[in-house]
Image 1: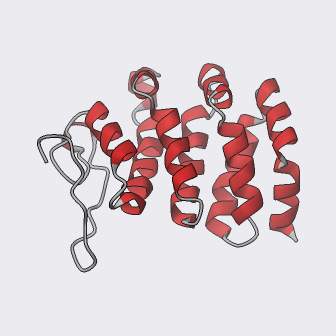
Image 2: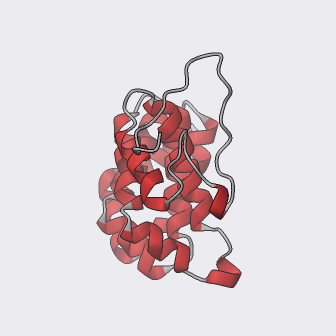
Length: 180
């Protein structure tokens, strides 16, 4: 809706495919700005699994969008709008939804991939602990979750603090469980 509230999608209604690139992006309504999308992502508790899944997926896509031409411009904008806490909050609210967790780990990995500054931001926001927790809980039960979590572990471990926090949170044990 124009007021920034999330419109719930009931079963049987079309599955909105998000994202549409840059100027065409919106989430289940008229939220046509990055901040509007993130507000919907944070506040969409009534239909939160759909919003959280597509929100995490969208943050991952946007993190890697047009890197060659725009550099870190999109990541900086997402960061200033609170994308990292939005991703980890969505994951924390949906610990029983493996698709949300997989897309959350994908978004964390994409946001930090190959960028020291952004990797440190994700680690400082608790991303390492979130990825390790999800990997331990779901890695052995879902190949999709394991794939994205292990990619997140690999990316975040490039940072010294990230490696320490991943180790302390049990990421190594989580990786072992996925291979058992």
